[in-house]
Length: 231
Image (cartoon, rainbow, N blue to C red; front, side, top):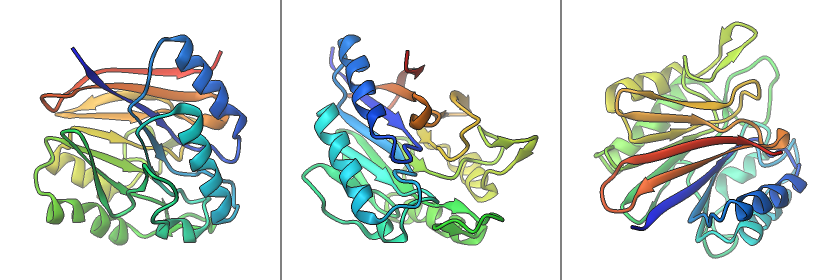
């Protein structure tokens, strides 16, 4: 029986050598991914052209049908407006996309921080962006949410403080999407389940972290999640 396999990564931060290492490791597992999902921070304060080159490299190295991405707080604000780069590379920041029976929707950037990074949004802006998926799609039973900023209380602990978005937590508790992939906080890596939602923080690819997600291609459900660190 066929399954849909996603590679979830975040926080590449220009460490492009990790892309070929992940591709090689996945090949050694005998796995071919259908889509790569990038939860932000392609670059480390580099321009939009660098982000585009990294996205193309992901497509070429891993050979998925699609690369879906949102920008992170360390990416050039122009990355928010990337439309077409190459066939199958799709910006889902405030946009929907579809793969088989699943609808993807993303919100890029981080929350307001004392570091004044390149893409930061207030809680009200994050709330407006995340709620937009309800306006354009409605049903969340088959929805995959991708955000760079983590959800408050999930994989967002930094020195004992939860820095995740409370607007995202409100959305999670109310709407229970099928799957939610986040990034941003380098100290975290793993997955958990909250109600009907599987939440994955793959950890920073720059340090060798990634996750593989297996979905049913007939009925919306998460079959298996594995979080890895490069050997």
